[in-house]
Length: 113
Image (cartoon, rainbow, N blue to C red):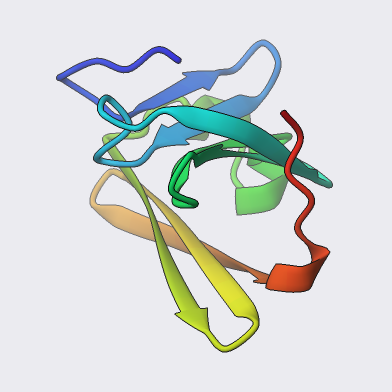
């Protein structure tokens, strides 16, 4: 997993793929991945989300790839309520925030190692 101290995301416009790393991605060990439609989640050995890869990111955010290439900040966070995990992912472009959420029932998650 690639991560830099300057930014916690990578956007590749040629394949329209955005990867957002959790703030603790450098210290977490990845146990496996979950693939769900356009999303690939890396999960740590203690069960936390380490990173989120979004394929066809411009469609997911409803933003042209040229604009998406101008991301200044990106973040992911989770909320757990009962059997439901909500993953919030956000990008900031020109001081405008675009946030989306994905709700996943815990019993629908199958970890691929």
